[in-house]
Amino acid sequence: MDERSNLLARHEIVRAYMYALENLPKVLAVCASSRDETDAVQRLRELFNISEIAADGILRLQVIRFIPEQIERVRSELNDIEMRLAQSDR
Image 1 (cartoon, helix red, strand yellow):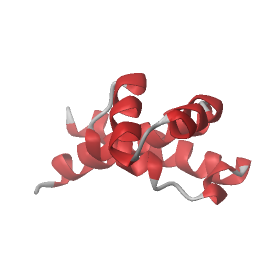
Image 2 (cartoon, rainbow, N blue to C red):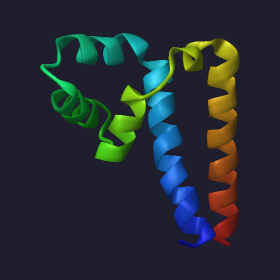
Image 3 (cartoon, one colour):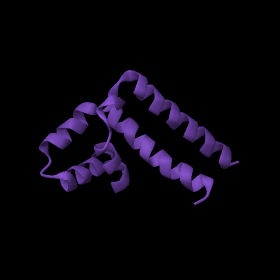
Image 4 (cartoon, rainbow, N blue to C red):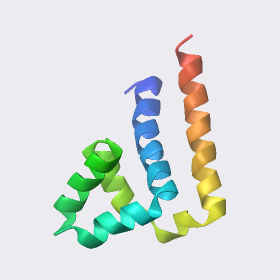
């Protein structure tokens, strides 16, 4: 994979993390009311309009990621990826 493809793949995951970090009550509600992991993945995909890989990433987030400092790190990474993608479009 080239650098742009890697950036796009990472962008998808990090963007999904931000959806989860900014919508914790919705994520927890989906998880608490899902029959199983497959159901939770499907429901997260529908809720956030994301891929299966991104939804699975949300389910695998560690609780420590919800600390404000960690949220800022994820947000910073997302901004960095978006800037690098914009530069690669030139």
